[in-house]
Image 1 (cartoon, rainbow, N blue to C red):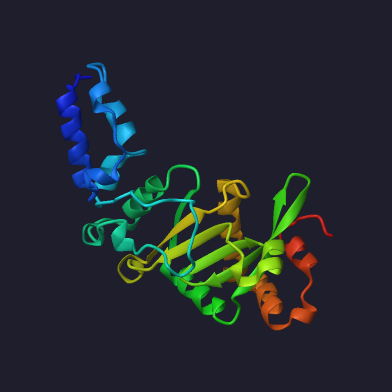
Image 2: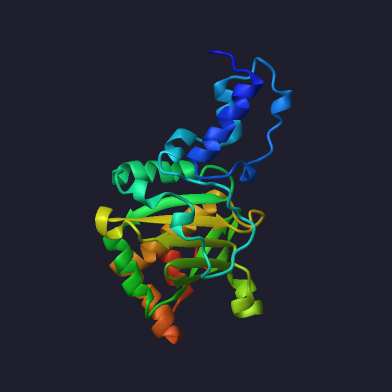
Length: 249
């Protein structure tokens, strides 16, 4: 591959920052003065941004936001602060999903999408039934997570923490839904932050999100959600364990 001079490398990093709608001040201070003639374009790409940054740049993505450093409920970043929505309007749903997935590479970054009609069903069912409990298997047993569906957000907190602190309990994992493309592309983008990576792995967070969706979107499972919210005295946690094929308590 063609070798690049230190001057050209600095110029390229500046161009990438412009492409992503980020100022160079929001990027890491790369030690360009220490780059040797052996530094190539591929290495530069990895330093500037993980994943396929050219795909990100095509939609004006800017990743100077922090992940997994805490969350203030109901004050999520607007989508237009993450990507250029006007440019995204010309892309297919498949392209948007692929680029969104690449944007969320790395520990504590959860990115996925769902059909708009499913989101609307979730929205409809969450209005009367905002809360639920889901067992998360860990090692030889499970811990119970308390779920708060307050769309466009979903918050996941350890049940014991919620019992002790109520609404002041810090969420372990948060999800924000973006509906900007719901009408035009039948697509809702989801952005998740694993707030406490010491308590929840990425795979566990994804499983929690998918399982929560299954309880709200599946007619049979949703009956358990309704029972938990409307007929608490008749709710049996073992019914949730049976639905998930977990050992009963």
